[in-house]
Length: 154
Image (cartoon, one colour):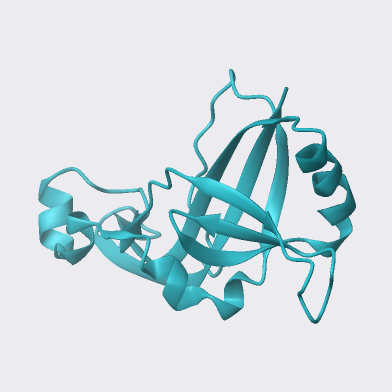
């Protein structure tokens, strides 16, 4: 199945607004530099099956972003209202143009309490039963890395 996205963590206590990070397609190498190799991704179909790691997508990289910064970029030649997204010191993209005015207001009024980042995508695989349910098969997929921010306000 093409274009499968990693399941995003749910946290009912975290209420905020979600923003897709734009421009991540231009920053794939920067994003992968933030990831850690998932040791399960290197395992064979047989090993995954033996360990009970079936019917779930396993991604080559895992991400645990800690520090997210939003940096206005008034000197940006394409858009003086641009807001750069920097995760753990790495520029991964921008706030979408249509959301910049709103996010500038939040920044200017010091209303941002917390910014969480979810990064997904990359190479993935899963071991699952075939259509007859008799044999295990290995499915593989790959989509570009992407990022979403959850901004919690005061």
